[in-house]
Amino acid sequence: MTSPIITTHSVGATVQLVLDRLFAQIKSEEYPLDSRLPSERALASEMGVSRNTVREALDVLESRNVIRRRPGSGSFVTWRSPEAESGHGAGAGVTGASVAFETSPLDHLVVRGIIEPEMVRLAVINMTPREIQELERLMAELENVHTDVEAFVAGEENLYRKIAAGTRNPLLASCYGLAIESCRVSFRAALLRRHLTPRRIRECQQRYKSLLQAIAARDVERAVELIKLHLLEEQKLLLQDL
Image (cartoon, rainbow, N blue to C red; front, side):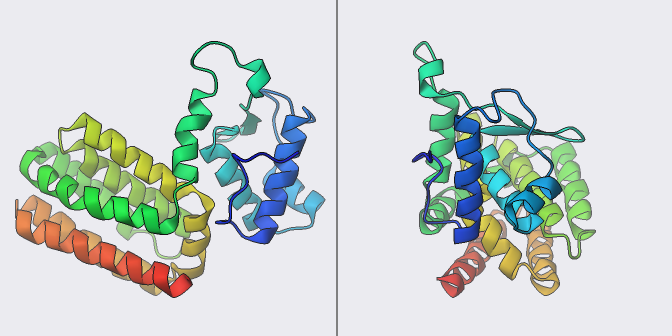
Protein backbone atom coordinates (compact mmCIF):
# COMPACT_ATOMS: atom_id res chain seq x y z
CA MET A 1 0.00 0.00 0.00
CA THR A 2 3.01 2.32 0.07
CA SER A 3 3.84 4.67 -2.77
CA PRO A 4 7.06 5.87 -4.43
CA ILE A 5 6.19 9.44 -3.47
CA ILE A 6 6.58 8.49 0.19
CA THR A 7 9.36 5.90 0.07
CA THR A 8 12.84 7.36 0.65
CA HIS A 9 16.22 6.31 2.00
CA SER A 10 16.55 9.65 3.80
CA VAL A 11 14.30 8.87 6.76
CA GLY A 12 14.94 6.60 9.71
CA ALA A 13 13.46 3.12 9.73
CA THR A 14 10.91 3.89 12.45
CA VAL A 15 9.76 7.08 10.71
CA GLN A 16 9.45 5.11 7.46
CA LEU A 17 7.21 2.55 9.17
CA VAL A 18 4.94 5.31 10.45
CA LEU A 19 4.91 6.90 6.98
CA ASP A 20 4.01 3.60 5.33
CA ARG A 21 1.22 2.92 7.77
CA LEU A 22 -0.30 6.40 7.63
CA PHE A 23 -0.11 6.59 3.85
CA ALA A 24 -1.66 3.12 3.53
CA GLN A 25 -4.53 4.25 5.77
CA ILE A 26 -5.00 7.37 3.64
CA LYS A 27 -4.89 5.40 0.38
CA SER A 28 -7.41 2.90 1.67
CA GLU A 29 -9.61 5.85 2.71
CA GLU A 30 -9.56 4.85 6.34
CA TYR A 31 -8.73 8.56 6.49
CA PRO A 32 -10.54 9.94 3.41
CA LEU A 33 -10.06 13.29 1.72
CA ASP A 34 -10.64 16.26 4.09
CA SER A 35 -10.83 14.00 7.15
CA ARG A 36 -8.90 14.88 10.29
CA LEU A 37 -6.06 12.64 11.44
CA PRO A 38 -5.81 11.66 15.11
CA SER A 39 -3.61 13.87 17.24
CA GLU A 40 0.16 13.30 17.41
CA ARG A 41 -0.26 11.90 20.92
CA ALA A 42 -2.98 9.48 19.81
CA LEU A 43 -0.97 8.32 16.78
CA ALA A 44 2.15 7.85 18.89
CA SER A 45 0.21 5.77 21.39
CA GLU A 46 -1.49 3.73 18.67
CA MET A 47 1.77 2.95 16.85
CA GLY A 48 3.99 2.57 19.90
CA VAL A 49 6.44 5.30 18.88
CA SER A 50 7.47 8.71 20.20
CA ARG A 51 5.63 11.91 19.32
CA ASN A 52 8.81 13.18 17.66
CA THR A 53 8.73 10.21 15.30
CA VAL A 54 5.09 10.91 14.44
CA ARG A 55 5.89 14.59 13.96
CA GLU A 56 8.70 13.76 11.50
CA ALA A 57 6.35 11.50 9.53
CA LEU A 58 3.71 14.24 9.45
CA ASP A 59 6.36 16.73 8.30
CA VAL A 60 7.05 14.51 5.31
CA LEU A 61 3.37 13.99 4.52
CA GLU A 62 2.75 17.73 4.66
CA SER A 63 5.76 18.47 2.44
CA ARG A 64 4.27 16.09 -0.15
CA ASN A 65 0.80 17.68 0.01
CA VAL A 66 -0.68 14.49 1.46
CA ILE A 67 -1.95 16.35 4.53
CA ARG A 68 -2.39 19.97 5.56
CA ARG A 69 -1.97 21.23 9.10
CA ARG A 70 -4.30 23.85 10.48
CA PRO A 71 -2.98 25.54 13.64
CA GLY A 72 -5.26 24.74 16.53
CA SER A 73 -7.35 22.31 14.48
CA GLY A 74 -5.08 19.40 13.53
CA SER A 75 -3.92 17.62 10.37
CA PHE A 76 -6.32 17.07 7.46
CA VAL A 77 -6.01 14.75 4.47
CA THR A 78 -5.51 16.54 1.13
CA TRP A 79 -4.26 13.59 -0.95
CA ARG A 80 -6.26 12.37 -3.92
CA SER A 81 -5.52 9.15 -5.78
CA PRO A 82 -4.33 9.59 -9.39
CA GLU A 83 -7.59 8.02 -10.52
CA ALA A 84 -9.55 10.70 -8.71
CA GLU A 85 -7.64 13.53 -10.36
CA SER A 86 -8.79 14.96 -13.68
CA GLY A 87 -7.53 17.50 -16.22
CA HIS A 88 -4.01 18.41 -17.29
CA GLY A 89 -3.11 19.70 -13.84
CA ALA A 90 -3.68 16.35 -12.16
CA GLY A 91 -1.23 15.73 -9.38
CA ALA A 92 0.60 19.02 -9.97
CA GLY A 93 0.90 19.77 -6.26
CA VAL A 94 2.48 16.40 -5.53
CA THR A 95 4.85 16.72 -8.49
CA GLY A 96 6.18 20.06 -7.27
CA ALA A 97 6.72 18.74 -3.77
CA SER A 98 8.34 15.56 -5.06
CA VAL A 99 11.28 17.53 -6.47
CA ALA A 100 12.13 18.75 -2.98
CA PHE A 101 11.43 15.37 -1.43
CA GLU A 102 13.71 13.48 -3.81
CA THR A 103 16.61 15.91 -3.34
CA SER A 104 19.48 14.37 -1.40
CA PRO A 105 21.24 16.30 1.39
CA LEU A 106 24.28 16.78 -0.84
CA ASP A 107 22.17 17.95 -3.80
CA HIS A 108 20.48 20.42 -1.49
CA LEU A 109 23.76 21.91 -0.30
CA VAL A 110 25.07 22.16 -3.87
CA VAL A 111 22.00 24.15 -4.91
CA ARG A 112 22.24 26.40 -1.86
CA GLY A 113 25.91 27.00 -2.66
CA ILE A 114 24.91 28.20 -6.11
CA ILE A 115 21.89 30.30 -5.10
CA GLU A 116 22.66 31.83 -1.70
CA PRO A 117 25.77 33.91 -2.52
CA GLU A 118 24.00 35.58 -5.46
CA MET A 119 20.79 35.91 -3.43
CA VAL A 120 22.66 37.69 -0.64
CA ARG A 121 24.53 39.91 -3.13
CA LEU A 122 21.27 41.07 -4.72
CA ALA A 123 19.63 41.56 -1.33
CA VAL A 124 22.46 43.82 -0.17
CA ILE A 125 22.00 45.94 -3.30
CA ASN A 126 18.20 45.98 -3.48
CA MET A 127 16.72 45.76 0.04
CA THR A 128 15.01 48.93 1.23
CA PRO A 129 15.71 50.39 4.69
CA ARG A 130 12.26 49.22 5.79
CA GLU A 131 13.01 45.65 4.66
CA ILE A 132 16.29 45.73 6.54
CA GLN A 133 14.39 46.84 9.65
CA GLU A 134 12.06 43.88 9.17
CA LEU A 135 15.11 41.65 8.84
CA GLU A 136 16.40 43.05 12.14
CA ARG A 137 13.06 42.26 13.78
CA LEU A 138 13.19 38.68 12.52
CA MET A 139 16.76 38.40 13.77
CA ALA A 140 15.69 39.60 17.22
CA GLU A 141 13.02 36.88 17.28
CA LEU A 142 15.59 34.29 16.24
CA GLU A 143 17.96 35.38 18.99
CA ASN A 144 15.25 34.73 21.58
CA VAL A 145 15.29 31.01 20.72
CA HIS A 146 17.71 29.05 22.89
CA THR A 147 16.71 25.38 22.89
CA ASP A 148 13.58 24.94 20.73
CA VAL A 149 14.86 23.44 17.46
CA GLU A 150 11.55 23.76 15.60
CA ALA A 151 11.17 27.41 16.60
CA PHE A 152 14.74 28.08 15.51
CA VAL A 153 14.24 26.43 12.11
CA ALA A 154 11.01 28.38 11.57
CA GLY A 155 12.80 31.64 12.43
CA GLU A 156 15.68 30.71 10.15
CA GLU A 157 13.23 30.10 7.28
CA ASN A 158 11.60 33.50 7.85
CA LEU A 159 15.00 35.18 7.72
CA TYR A 160 15.95 33.48 4.45
CA ARG A 161 12.57 34.19 2.86
CA LYS A 162 12.92 37.88 3.67
CA ILE A 163 16.40 37.97 2.13
CA ALA A 164 15.14 36.13 -0.97
CA ALA A 165 12.25 38.58 -1.35
CA GLY A 166 14.70 41.46 -0.99
CA THR A 167 16.53 40.43 -4.16
CA ARG A 168 13.67 41.89 -6.24
CA ASN A 169 13.96 38.79 -8.41
CA PRO A 170 10.73 36.77 -8.13
CA LEU A 171 12.12 33.82 -10.08
CA LEU A 172 15.14 33.54 -7.81
CA ALA A 173 12.91 33.88 -4.74
CA SER A 174 10.64 31.16 -6.09
CA CYS A 175 13.58 28.84 -6.75
CA TYR A 176 14.83 29.46 -3.24
CA GLY A 177 11.36 28.69 -1.90
CA LEU A 178 11.75 25.21 -3.34
CA ALA A 179 15.14 24.94 -1.62
CA ILE A 180 13.42 25.79 1.66
CA GLU A 181 10.83 23.08 1.01
CA SER A 182 13.63 20.57 0.59
CA CYS A 183 14.93 21.67 4.01
CA ARG A 184 11.66 20.52 5.49
CA VAL A 185 11.88 16.92 4.37
CA SER A 186 12.84 14.54 7.06
CA PHE A 187 16.55 14.07 6.31
CA ARG A 188 17.22 17.61 7.51
CA ALA A 189 14.67 17.48 10.32
CA ALA A 190 16.38 14.42 11.74
CA LEU A 191 19.82 15.98 11.21
CA LEU A 192 18.85 19.15 13.03
CA ARG A 193 17.29 17.32 15.95
CA ARG A 194 20.54 15.42 16.44
CA HIS A 195 22.95 18.32 16.03
CA LEU A 196 21.20 21.62 16.78
CA THR A 197 22.28 21.81 20.40
CA PRO A 198 21.96 25.07 22.35
CA ARG A 199 25.64 25.74 21.60
CA ARG A 200 25.16 25.25 17.87
CA ILE A 201 22.06 27.44 17.94
CA ARG A 202 24.13 30.22 19.50
CA GLU A 203 26.83 29.80 16.85
CA CYS A 204 24.24 30.03 14.06
CA GLN A 205 22.69 33.10 15.65
CA GLN A 206 26.08 34.80 15.75
CA ARG A 207 26.70 34.03 12.07
CA TYR A 208 23.26 35.31 11.07
CA LYS A 209 23.75 38.47 13.13
CA SER A 210 27.05 39.15 11.37
CA LEU A 211 25.33 38.57 8.02
CA LEU A 212 22.57 41.01 8.93
CA GLN A 213 25.14 43.64 9.94
CA ALA A 214 26.89 43.24 6.57
CA ILE A 215 23.58 43.58 4.70
CA ALA A 216 22.66 46.69 6.71
CA ALA A 217 26.10 48.18 5.97
CA ARG A 218 25.64 47.41 2.24
CA ASP A 219 28.89 45.44 2.36
CA VAL A 220 28.44 43.02 -0.54
CA GLU A 221 31.81 41.26 -0.23
CA ARG A 222 31.48 40.70 3.51
CA ALA A 223 27.89 39.44 3.23
CA VAL A 224 28.76 36.97 0.47
CA GLU A 225 31.80 35.77 2.41
CA LEU A 226 29.68 35.19 5.52
CA ILE A 227 27.02 33.16 3.71
CA LYS A 228 29.74 31.01 2.13
CA LEU A 229 31.25 30.39 5.57
CA HIS A 230 27.82 29.44 6.91
CA LEU A 231 27.32 26.98 4.05
CA LEU A 232 30.73 25.50 4.86
CA GLU A 233 29.61 24.88 8.44
CA GLU A 234 26.43 23.20 7.16
CA GLN A 235 28.57 21.00 4.93
CA LYS A 236 30.71 19.95 7.90
CA LEU A 237 27.54 19.07 9.80
CA LEU A 238 26.33 16.92 6.91
CA LEU A 239 29.65 15.11 6.48
CA GLN A 240 29.74 14.47 10.22
CA ASP A 241 26.42 12.65 9.86
CA LEU A 242 27.38 10.49 6.86
